[in-house]
Image (cartoon, rainbow, N blue to C red):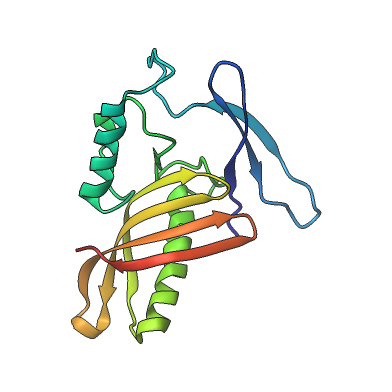
Length: 179
């Protein structure tokens, strides 16, 4: 069983940071753990509370260039408007010994199940490549991965999925080949 800590935006505090409470999905006995941190989406050395119109425009161009929140080059930006890369080999969103990669693989398998049912396909997860996320009332994951296609000589093909996660509610928004 994978237990997931999900960042939930609480309320702004005076220094412009956003307080988040990371909580663990309720256990069978109804309890949950909480850990509160502050994060404003900016690197620690960011010295302005505002970003310029040019920076917003460049970020929008990056999203257009890559077709959404997939494979963002975060090094280009001082401020990423809440978008974050997910370290797949860490356990920031799950309890050890699980890793973020295990959690994302679970989400991808849900997306592939939906995709396969809707299209009469039999794609299988090959490898999770990249996962970025954007928290709001839920956490939206933009996942790039490879599938194996048994109907096509088990060829490896690049795919993408968008999945929204909130404890107790997972929504597969999309799952499609990377063009």
